[in-house]
Image (tube, rainbow, N blue to C red; front, side, top):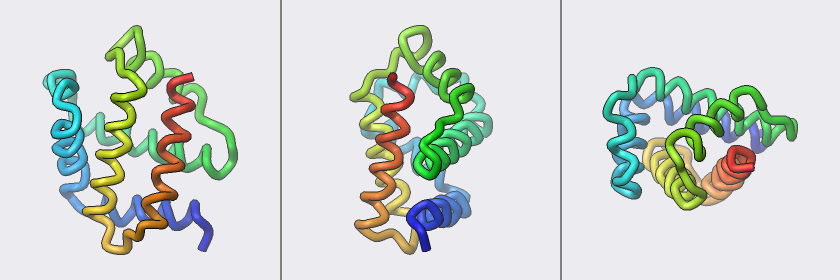
Length: 130
């Protein structure tokens, strides 16, 4: 099984858990409490859909080298200087929270899988920040 397939299957296993996104946000707010108020008026179902799309975009970028530039442009705009003003450090916490959540919810998680996740997520974040 190729690495992209392994990551896709891992994400399916994680998101099959009904508490996956709640657990992710709890961990994110624990690591980065300053962003919690930014979510006070956010429709969390929409936010979950956006994270799904973002991670899917990151996985596709890892497979093809091409990013969904329209989607990433929108995220860059809403999360960057014109929006939420998130920094590289903030995104680092986001990656850590996602890895921690994947590790806690994927019954087939391995260290190697976690390393592959980190590479894909960090590459996606780099694309967001350019």
